[in-house]
Length: 338
Image (cartoon, rainbow, N blue to C red; front, side, top):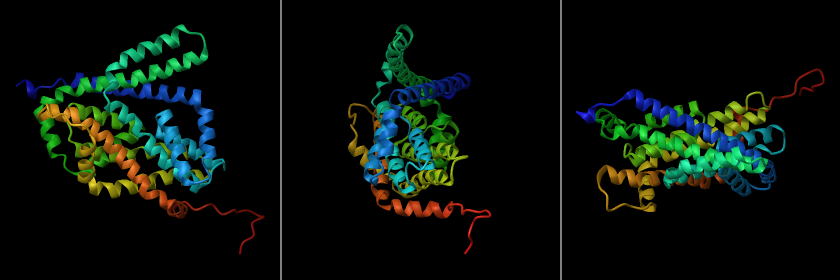
C-alpha cells in the first residue's frame, strides 16, 4: 500500500537539509543582530544588576532581539567571569532569557513560513546590491530570517509523508514515556545546540498532525534541558564563577522540568483553552491546524511559570551552585592558613 511505503533517503535528506538551512539562517540572524545591536544589548545586560526583576526583563528583551537564549547565557557567563555581574544578579537574566527564546516558537506557529522566499529575496537584494554597511547588515538579518523559515518549510515537506506511514504512526502511539521523550529531545538539542531549532522541528511535526500536544510539551521540556550544554561549553577555561553561572542555567531548567513534567496534562488543558480552535476541521487536519499554536503557547507558559516560581529563590540557586562548585581557596607561600 502507498501508506506503507516511504522514500527514506529523500525524507532524511530533506529533513537534514532543512535543519541545516534553519541552523545556518539562525546563526546568520543572530550574528548580524549581535553586530548591529550587540553593544547596546551588552549595556542593557550590564546595567540590569540592580534587582532580579530588571534582570528578567533585560534577559527576555535581549533574547527576543537576538533570537538565542544560548547567546544571552554565554554573555552572562562572560560578564560574571569578568566581575561585571555577580552570580546572584545573573540569575534573573538567565530566567528572562528562557522567556525571550519562546518568541521564535510563536513566530513559527503563526505560519509566517510561507513568506520565507520573499524574505530571502529581499535580504539578498539588500545585501548584494547595496554598498552601505548598515543596509547590508539589515539585509543579512532579513535573509537569515528567511532561511530560518525556509528551513522549517523543508522540514515540513520532508516529514509530510509520515502522516500516512503506518509504522511511524504506530511508533508515536507507543511513545508514552514522558521521561524517555524528554531525554530524546534533550539529547537532540544538546547535539545541535539550539533549543529554538528543536522547538521549531516540534512545531513542524505538530503542523503535520504527527504528534499530540502532550508529546509536544514533553519534547519542549527536553529542549529546555538540552540547551544548557552551550553555556557549560562557554564556561570552559573561565573563572569558577563563570562555571557557577552556567550551572545556574542547568539547575533552573532541570528543576523546572522536574516540576512541570508532572503537570503536562494540566499545561495541555490550559494551552488548549488559551489557543484558537478550528471547529470546521476534523481528525488529523484539525490537529495539524491547532496543535502548533498550542505547543508554542505551552512553551511560553512553561518558561513564564518557571520564572514566576523560581524568581523568589535566586539566593537558594546561588547557594546550591556555590556548594557544587565552591570558590577556590587561595594557595601559595603568602597564604595564611588558620
